[in-house]
Length: 213
Image 1: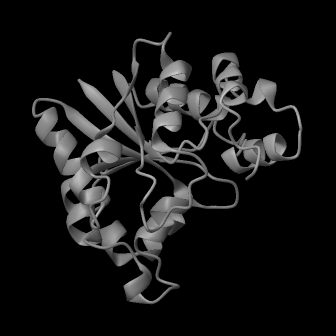
Image 2 (image 1 turned 180 degrees about the vertical axis):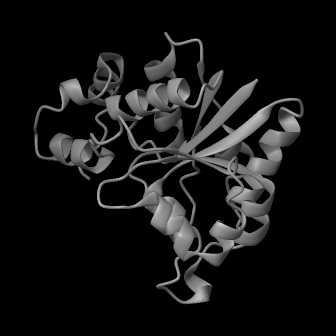
């Protein structure tokens, strides 16, 4: 089985998150995509609603798709842990699915940040060498970013580019609707109803979320 780990804040999850996951699943021939919301106390994230609400909204969004599942590993087991590193997350899921191929799904912008040669070493990802050496990745295109150049520019990335390490998906992922745009619409009294699943939209209204973002 081939499994993709799709980590994000999902604050909130959008139709584009779902469409992207579906596109990745089909193009990379995955059997399952696991939606992995990060914990609200991560130092590198500024989230706008509680873990419980984001978790419930994700569940509503994927409930009718059998190949989409959600996992609360980072919310429940890693919450409050200072070192919430992707390396540990991938080690957890490879241990959980020892007989399967497990991939980490990320955008080209995130790949660039792992070992960005334009920033000081201390601002690059922690334990990036072991992360890249021991895992496989599915990279989603982002406007204005040449994925092959990102890999070739980094000694770490290019030295591990063996043809199977990075699965680049550069078609069908140009559309973007950010969670921040949806939050702004809610806060300003807008109408983002058709940018996320209807059940998620109604849940946000019912619990009065993002009104004061």
